[in-house]
Every structure is written in structure tokens, then in C-alpha cells.
Image (cartoon, rainbow, N blue to C red):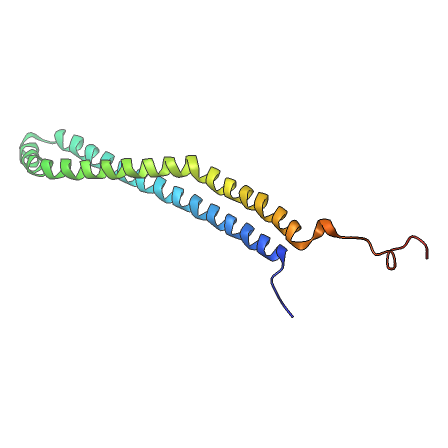
Length: 138
């Protein structure tokens, strides 16, 4: 007959803690890549604008007019992207700062509660040696 033992419960909690830690790590990597991607897009646009300014005067004027019409839209989009990046940064900082402490602390609390409860509930401390089976004399 198969049934759940104390070590099975402890092992499942250990596996759960490992998966939570891996999820947190994956979340932080995703947030960091998202922030870097947003910053890279903003840098590419500024490089293109600088390159347009170095063009010939006739092309420069037509491109500058197009830039000026799109400038308001770009500013608004950049502001939204900056706000998203700031939110991602805040979430990433909170996850880095408190994530490890929360996972490690909850695992420690589980062990502090689980093992004493298990030993008390099992009657481990009430165990008496039966001298009929464990006598020193053969």
C-alpha cells in the first residue's frame, strides 16, 4: 500500500521552493531584457535623428518637417515607454530585494513548524525501548 510519508511532503515543498526560485529568476531576466530593449529603441531613434541632421540641406529640410510632425507622437510614445520602463525597474528592484528573502524565509518557517510538529505528532519523544527485543543480553 502506498501512502504519503513525512519525507514526501518535505521533498515536495523543496521542489516547490526550487521552482518558485526559478520562476523569480526567469521573471527578472525577462524584465531586464524588456528594459534594455526599450532603451535600445530610444537610442536608435536618436542616432537616426542625428544622422538626418548631417544630410544635405535640401533633404534635411524635408526630413526635418516630417520629424517635426511626428515629433509630438514620438515624445508621447517615448514618455509611455519611459513610464513602462520605470514600472519594470520598480518591479525588478522589488523582486530582487524581497523575492529571495520571502522564498528563503518561507522555507525556513516551513521547517521550523513542520519538523517539531511531525516529531510531536508521531510520538517520537514518547518512544520507549522494549527490552524483550533490544536487550543487551543475548
